[in-house]
Image 1 (cartoon, rainbow, N blue to C red):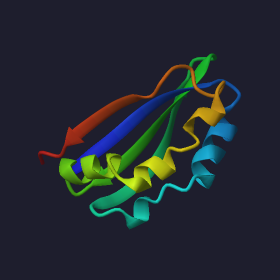
Image 2 (cartoon, rainbow, N blue to C red; image 1 turned 180 degrees about the horizontal axis):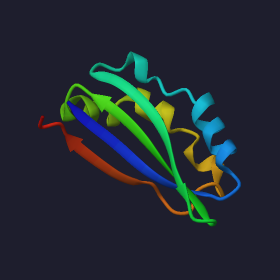
Image 3 (cartoon, helix red, strand yellow; image 1 turned 120 degrees about the vertical axis):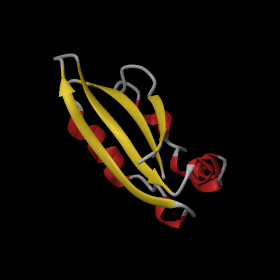
Length: 100
């Protein structure tokens, strides 16, 4: 199992807008081989930003990497630049192999 996470710093006061972007996006993940599950996690706020994590679970790293090269990936990320002001910097990716 492979877990892929992106950490986002979202401008304080714009959390609901960010959640709505994710709620309404056409992720196409359900049609991707090896995809298991997705969660959007909301973390702490420091008054300037709130941390969010996109968390997806895959059969393995190869399945995740294949998705990042797919047409479904390109389509899901096509409008990423339309939400300037929401993001305080680029997302930070972390990938993990399950060992137990």
